[in-house]
Length: 399
Image 1 (cartoon, rainbow, N blue to C red):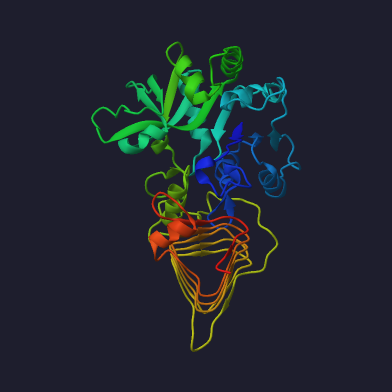
Image 2: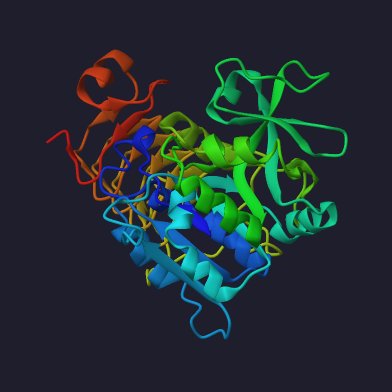
């Protein structure tokens, strides 16, 4: 069960017209692609995707790029909120699963993976499943270490020497650190493996509680671990073939993290690779021609540490540490640095862009300068807390 109903308010204006899992990432992908690739590469291809907010673009992406109907016994099915338990939408993550419990029971699984859909990472889910079975618990929660100053955004976990959960607090103001490591906390990644009967019982009981927010992190886990065996899976022990270095995981919950994670994959030695043939990253690839570069002996093109997606055209420009999505048109004399263009964007001649996120279907007038005067930019454009300029979908800038 992939939880893909997130509204993504902290990613505004990128989520004005799309849900958070449908936000483009890395030039060719959507955020939801990473959890789907993890499951499919782990040979888990019985997947329900639970949607709610602004789900049309997400639905079309799944329909075009993740159709496995020709494989017997396999499915990747989006399920919109259908008010199956009364005239109400999903009240929380646990309620979204509860309202669709009949779909799960039809498949008759022994274990159920309940995973989030808006994180950038690679995980062999079968390794977590093997850990879950070996411990004999009722629930396993995947966890990762994060700096203490960032832990207040997550569920903070305490474990004993055997890996069993002995403490859990959702988004605490003063998170408890790891014993012997005062600078870091152990936090939930939002990925859970339940024994099927346990999941049925817990979400049904939670649905009857009028004081519950019907959320896995706020209600189900805090109620379950003191009275049953809940274990914690260390994400850093997960091994992906062909990968080197520490395991990468980012919750791109806000604009600054979204921008920074793109800069991560563009670095000299990226901590997250899009190019591992032993762990392919599938998505929906539209029928577009290759990238076209237009230069002359007098005026060339310089591109460094950047990703340029299909259908794009670059003319006599400088592009550095940037991502260009599908069908970007860059006119002559432009300079684009430390920026993310989501696609279908037209940049006029002589533009200078720095530290920008440009949504789809944006046109920028010739000679426009963004990112060089922070005070002026804040007065005219949406900016993140750290000063990243964000241009909403369909904007016309500088005309």
